[in-house]
Image (cartoon, rainbow, N blue to C red; front, side, top):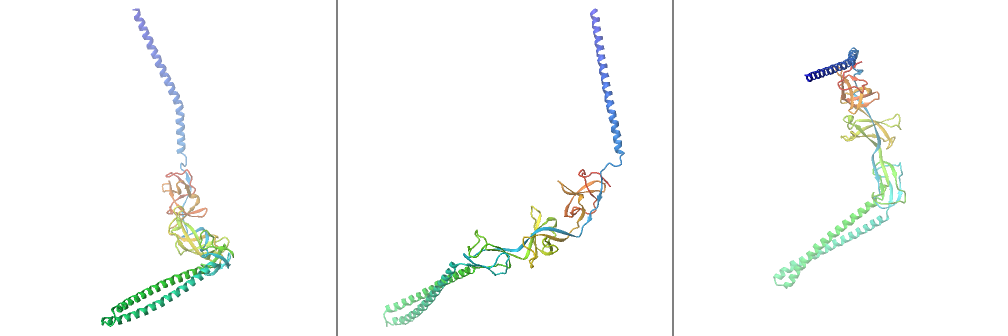
Length: 417
């Protein structure tokens, strides 16, 4: 009975302890919830106030200034650098071995086609020519001797024929011995063979004569090379020999005797960029500006174009020729070549500040009808400093941002100023 009361008392105590723990847990949770609410509500209120302030602000988008592209001139001026070069240049070498006997020109001498620049003395060649001419004389005599032998052989053959024709009938009549007839026939055949041999001797003598005459002509031509001649009208630009110098024929490892340049007509080769290459055609006029000739403009003509672009530089090689008969221009001068080109399609002029150059290339920022940014790739032409030409990419009716910020992005909403 007493043990039962003890167990009941313990159960009552355990139940009370659980109740107290539950009450403590609920009180702690309520305290934490109160603290969270105390910190969150002010932040929520501040966020609402900030959002209301932003919504109540007068502008929420970037403000930009815009311009319209202006139509460029129907003609464009293309200015390119180039080096003035002679139309023709040549290095004059010796064609025979010997010593320089006489030198007639020096650096800067103006020469005409065929003018004697120098004379080379070649005694060995002269003696070879004399010997070859003597050999020709011998060959001519041998030919004459062979021709005389042919005449003699023909006479002997004719006599043998007459003897044969006389002896054969006599032999048939038994008037002479058959041996005499046989000897006459054999003699005729022998004389006929002598004629053939004489004709062959003449052919050999004629061939020898032709070979010796060809050798004389070759040596005579080589002797003619003792006179060094100018290949064309021009100016001597280099001289590498003096009187008494030993020279060798050919250009194997030796310096040329002279260098000559044709400067009556000069040429300038320039590299035209791809954007203007299609506008350059042979026959067009071009002008030259040379700083050493201030105030004077030289007019040239496009002589030829490469008709293809260099893969690396994207330029087309173009040659301009200019008249220089007065000699006022010198080969090697630096010049600016000016082309006045008629545009095949209109170009537009915009401020340089409107151009964007980044890793995406060259672009401009346009404003669409719904006030959003749209980037347009473009290709520029002539750079005029504060302004640039746009040759590809624009229609002309776009509204372009005059000074686009790096923070602008495709499709971003803006507001025009």
